[in-house]
Length: 376
Ligand SMILES: Cc1cc2nc3c(=O)[nH]c(=O)nc-3n(C[C@H](O)[C@H](O)[C@H](O)COP(=O)(O)OP(=O)(O)OC[C@H]3O[C@@H](n4cnc5c(N)ncnc54)[C@H](O)[C@@H]3O)c2cc1C
Image 1 (cartoon, rainbow, N blue to C red):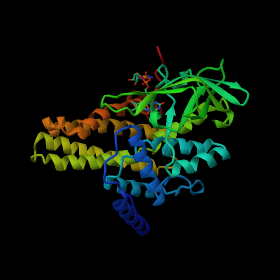
Image 2: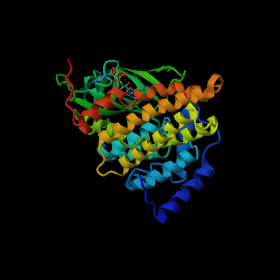
Image 3: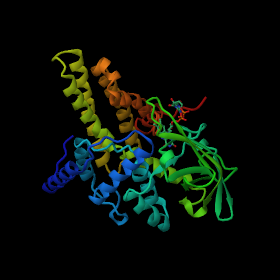
Image 4: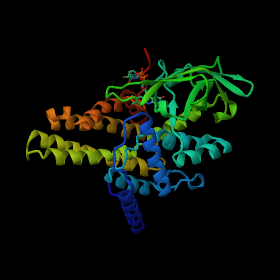
């Protein structure tokens, strides 16, 4: 894919490169907990001070409203500089809670929350999935009952990333009993310090605890925290998921190319060897993922199903890259703790944000036009 950058774009790239060179922290980010929170907020505050926070947000809300071409340049430079992963605990706030508030929130909600997000003062988490509602989100059962000017919330969420260190949660609940499935849901801003909330971190395969179960026991949430209209949460949630699935992960997708090049430099495979062939294939796959990412970003109007295609290719390629890293390191992987950690974390790539099977269903139905599979 050919991108034609202008002279002004080159000037922008030079400014981004210079700032990143001077600003990227030397220490790597902690994996989880309060230390990860402090690191991520400090990095975001530094980005904000340098004019690099909320770069895709409209300027009327404090962002920079950058064009897709400029976003591409920024993230190319970002991964080149080995800046902290974009998938840190500020990810939800910057990439889907903030954009959802911009699209569907009230004037008061925007005025209160958006500046705090952009300047690195708050962490948000997402409370959509439940033990009985993941891929089938519309079957969620956590309830909110209107009492005066509050909702009283009872139930449980699970897999809520960063919930243990979050200030706010984008919480999807059932507020109109009697209505089923997509109807009668509401998207509310939940203050994670409200009485009645219990957060129980879950340890993953890699030993990190960046997601959690969240329990709600008569949690009182002001009705003024409902985003969009009461009982209109499905529409708002689809906005959230579209931000999450479209371009939020561009930094991760471009970073795979850097990881593959680092791996090739580390492996130095003999020409013609099986490893050389495997790494060449990974390099070609990373290049095609990059091209798909650019195409999705530049295509107007972009569609959510394009996002599914990129998301699926990214998730499965990331797993192959981390598997190859383990094979290149061999027994050394046992002491290269970061590589082992990244490899174990990569198992979640084909689950988080919609499983590989669900992405394939979307691609089959919406891109290939295949008939919908009916549940047995
Ligand atoms: C690292 C990570 C972070 C996460 N962060 C969050 C978060 O912050 N907030 C949040 O709300 N959730 C979060 N999740 C949850 C995630 O969205 C769900 O795990 C995901 O949607 C799958 O739901 P489930 O786990 O309930 O699996 P299920 O939906 O029960 O699926 C089980 C299996 O059945 C398959 N399956 C289900 N339905 C179909 C179908 N129709 N066709 C074919 N196969 C099907 C699935 O692909 C899967 O293999 C996170 C998950 C991970 C791994």
